[in-house]
View (cartoon, helix red, strand yellow):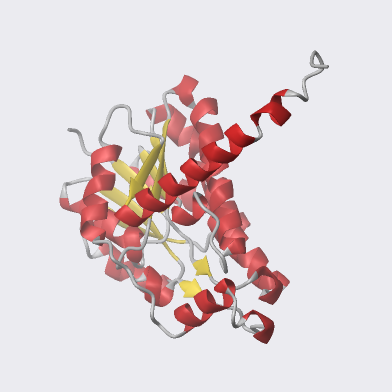
Length: 279
């Protein structure tokens, strides 16, 4: 298999870093985005000449296109784009400030949208692959994660649409949907409201917020096994649109599908009765 050229957002830790390290270990080249200039030398030391650090905070929209251009110039092209930059926000919607809501959506959704848009000419030229890191939170609603779920559900819809828009150009798309994995995400990439409301303390949303704030996030998944699974899908000529990772992701999404199917069947007569030709 010929060496690939990757652009991965958010390579300071978590899946972004692990995926970059795995790609470099097999001889590929990686441009990885970092929010601090002091992190660049450490990343580039992973593989001299094949690891390129690019300064970018994906919430700075004006910087996205130049950063993508910098990565493309350094690598000589882009074959694989991985939109990984993001963080979790655990708190009831009413507890969140406008800034907290806007930032989690700007980072997880708009960062993905505008990075993808900027990279599309290079990906079209190389019949490339877009990998969007979603989450179990993109598949099911979670009490206490409404804003984060909104962003990740939107990433799901975005990627489904892109899979149809970009197929004529040979660009493939892959949604990665992890459950709870033991990465730095749990310790450094989950935030809670700055001003929690006591009224939610004894509700599912409040329990989730307190659990996270107390540092008690349980992560049962092995991140190295997850990266191996991602690489397997990435290397497929026809990767799946969705790659669920972890028994928790599989079990909870399947349970949702069962509930939804039961509701759809229960209301089928009402649904079909809305057609103009009925009645």
